[in-house]
Image (cartoon, rainbow, N blue to C red):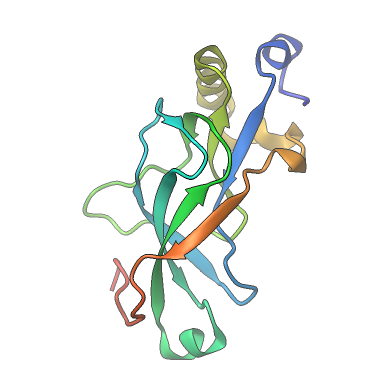
Length: 154
C-alpha cells in the first residue's frame, strides 16, 4: 500500500476504507444516522457499524420520495481510526453517494494513531494512494422493513 509518506507507509501496513453502502444501482444517496461503534473501538467481522437511510432504493421509491432505514455489517476487522463526518445530534446528516469513503479501519492501535494524525493534517486527501482492494466488504440489512416517508430530515 502506498501511504502518504515512507515513514507512514512503513507503520501503516493495512488501511481499510469503509464505504457508504451502495445497496442498489438506482440508489441516489444515503445518510448515516448512527454509528454503532466509536472511534478507537475494535470492529470485528459481523459487527454492525452504522445505521443509514437510503433514498431512491428502487425506481418506485424515487417517484414516491420514500426512504428506507438500513444497517451495515462489517465483513472485516480493525480499529475504527477515523469517521469522516460524525453524526451530530439534532442535525440532518448530509447525503453521501454510494461507495464514498466514510471511515477508516486499521490493524493496530499504533497504526490508528498514525492514521488519525495523517487525517488531521490532510483530511480525505490521504486516501489518494489507497488501492481499491482495501475497501471493506460489507452486508446491509433492512432496519425497518416498512418503507414510508420516514427520513430523519423530513
